[in-house]
Amino acid sequence: MEIDNRPILLKEALIESWFGLGFFAIFAMLWIFGVDNPLIIGALAIIIAVLFMNGLAKTDLLFANKYPNWWKENKFFNLLHHIQGEGELAGVLVGVVLLVYIYAHCHQDSLHLPIYAAFALSGIMAAANIATKSIIPIMNAMEKVIGVWGATWIGAMLSTLTGAASSVFVSQYLIDRVKDEDKNEVALRLSAGIGLGNGILPFVAPPVLIVWATLQEKIGWGLGDLFLMVGVIGIIYSGFITYNIKNLVGEVTVKSESKTKFFSKELAILAILVVGNILAYTSIEMLILNGVISLLGVYLMDDFNSRYQPIILGFLLVALEIIGHVGEPFVNFAVNSILPKDMPVLALGIILFFITAWTSHVADNALASRILIGVLFSMGYVGSQMDFLVSAVLIGALFGGFLLIPANIPNFPIARIFSIDSGAWLKSALKIYWTTVIPVVWIIALYFVLI
Image (cartoon, rainbow, N blue to C red):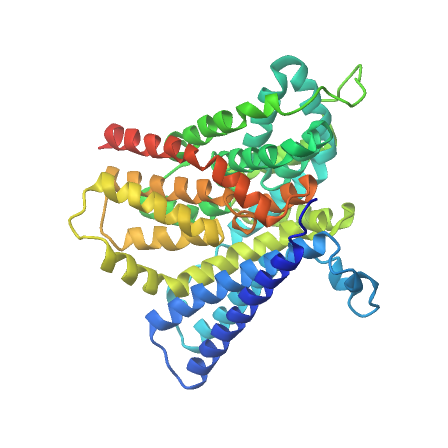
């Protein structure tokens, strides 16, 4: 008999949310009484964001499964039942409050909001959602040539072009062919492959995108640097972790089509948007185009996630920058207090990988990336050493998103489509956690190549 874990999930959601509210009350009291200690405020900002985002993300999982039932029937609350993305919206709300705090205390001079990046993320994800129905038949056609593993591998790597939308079309491509007892493993392998495969390009990879402008400005990174130091291991790991999926799915159950359309206006829009953002995502023309496509997605799509999640994620990216800005002094102090001053660079890189990955397990991986990259720039490293350490942090953030459902945006649609609760997700994730050795080996090899 299957155990119903939803009451436990509801309890966890309420506990985390109420603790978040308690810390928020402390923050409000300090604000009222004029306490402006950056270490205390920074610690509270991070704690509030993590608790609220995790607590309300778990609430999202409950509502997605139509639990409790009264919520849907109540004439006053039934609208809220259809709102998803509560965890992301909680992060946005925390960001808004902290933005008001920053301006109230005149700390805005050093704050740089990633507006262009937010529009790029929203626009590309909206275009990918619109094109999803055109992509699944193409994946079925690819399977005839390169097999189910090849199609799944490519689908996972498409997350670098389509963001969380890839988790939707790859899951839908596989779901009808997976036995119930294999769904957990397929879902987790897909999540891990999408997570690290997301970082080949920066534009729909929140852990990379949130710091991309900083990396370009301060250490001169370009797309080639990102690909060689982070993207290649993303490709390798994505292929490795999805390999066993071919043994867990059955034959194609969809009707064979004599002709598969490899071109559609939806795919053309997606391609134009991706290329345009690669070439000039900071231009006003691309900002307008990204905004128009985001609004077009709201008009054309049906469900709440497809319509509004791209825009919500754009706002969340900005909110995470604000949270990271406020929390950075505390994390900077904590990391520099814990780590020895003369630590070898290789050891520091491995430690930063694990710190970022573990932070990503319990918090949003973009927030983990933003905070740890900020800490790095306070350490004074330059040249190839800085390139190596930045790569370790980014790989840790991308890798760390698969352990818990709220840790990475693509996990939510995967969990819904495969009908997996948080307990089963964690249990399955621990079974493949040994694959951490692959990015660690890559980081060690990268050290000897660069330094």
